Image 1 (spheres, rainbow, N blue to C red):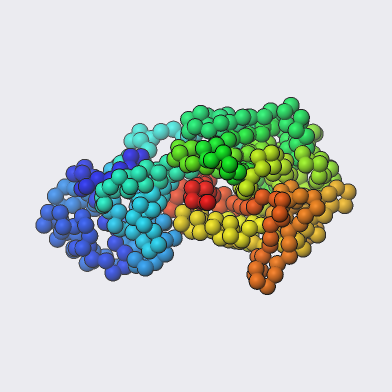
Image 2: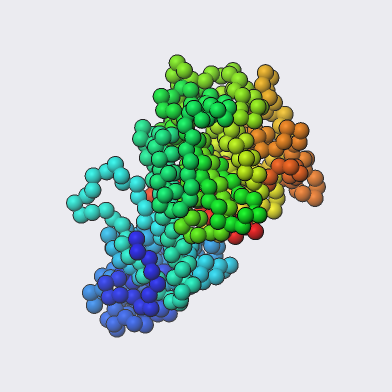
Length: 511
């Protein structure tokens, strides 16, 4: 989709009138340049509308087109509603089969964002709303219903144009990640995911190395090898490097779960849960396309991306409940449930991240149904050993529409994952708090053996924890709640592309 600034709408563009509660159409920037007959027509149309939340495409008396959007909220309402409104503009335009529109930048200016920030956000949301996964469909005779051109009318300047270009890049990379996640598991294998990372690196400008099974064995990644045993598709370990920051700056490492299909292994998932498990590599897809977005935006940072890629299948060679897997760190995992495989492969990737002596490690994974049970489908869970970092990421999520909610990471929960015959069990001792015990499990492979998360104190609040002196700051994002879109997102069904926008925002701004 072509998104550019313009001084005035082209005659071929449908005009978008986005009106919030209390707005008069006569005061809209586009209204004053209409023919008198068009003005009278719109006045009558608005006057006789009783709905306070609707969209409609109109053919004006002069022959032009316009799209009218009425929104319940007023200008004081939240950025959250503005983000959805941006998406609604494109989804309604697509529904009406309109190819070209003109949108007023002033319509979406909201409290807390600068003009350039609004322009960037708008471009990202427009791209996301203009996406639909149709790779496996026959093209209709009249073509796909996509918007081809958007003219953003407002303050035409170099900075606004640059912001729109940046937002477009972010939206494009989110959509590429959604395509990877939506691709059926029969096609999106560990090898294919690795190929996509190589392709993305070549196109965007970051280095990619892919380790095959023999190299993974040399690294003694028993977690990755153990989960992969049941599949004919062999594992891959994807390493991505983007070093454009100062040489003295330690890198930030992103680790993404790359389970290209998760049957649950011998602890087979029930049929109502297994259908969407080709999206269990959404964390890995996110890491690949965060790297691509940063490279395309020429961000001056040192970033590393790691993705352990496996398929979790039941077969005669599968790993079993009761197996003991020795990870790259030397720590052993007692497998109590083969469907808790994501944390097992991430354990090796988190250990590998230490090679870079990172300042921050962030892992992104569709890890637990428990996170969805706790939060529903409107926010991902965040766990961190650094309260300041946690706050920074939550703010990045609010700004981009990738919402996060913090859950505790206390040392008391470590009791839940102590193994009987191995160092750590891959599930907790009870059915409760599964998202937390999964996070605490991962923490064991970030910190040093002799150190643990400190207890909370009255000053640090309910989520309080402290970093160990020798471990990097660590963030765990459980994006299972946001793996797929929901109706109120105003996005196409399928993968949501969660965490990409917030990570790009965080990584660009973090000092």
